[in-house]
Image 1 (cartoon, rainbow, N blue to C red):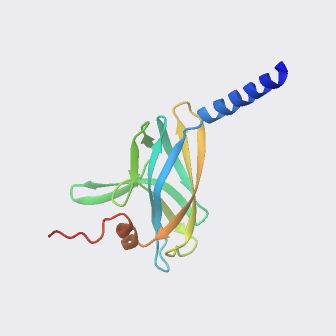
Image 2: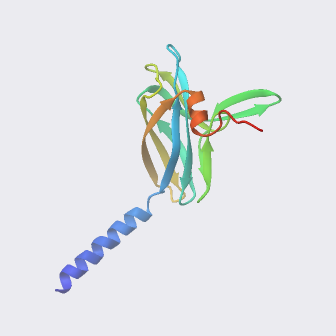
Image 3: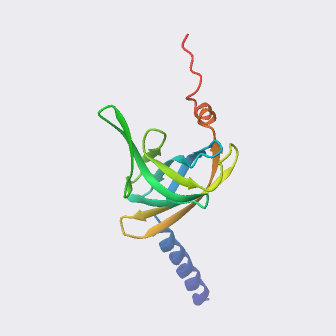
Length: 159
């Protein structure tokens, strides 16, 4: 009788240890901006939150030849966009990837991304322990106007 109880305890411990080793990143409100025919680049936007300190290292998608984590900023009245080597995900804090800020850039698109499409995106996150985790996403494509309406940024009225 002792052996089965020991086996169950070891199994529970093994599952607990493997879950604790993951960065435990959650993704909310992800969307990709739909494109027009012949457009070769678009952005993916979302909210990321990690249970422990981590970094977003990279992203991939089969719809694009090149995928990079980008930062958009204003420099002397000029909007600049550049790839960044990583994006810090402080423990317990929401990090917004949004138009005009940090985002995932999908370049060298292989086809038009149409409103309503589902775009596969894989995020690569590294915990402070150096272990990497892939986060597989199926991201809906929307027009920028549709996304703004969904998030309450559209028609605002003051009376």
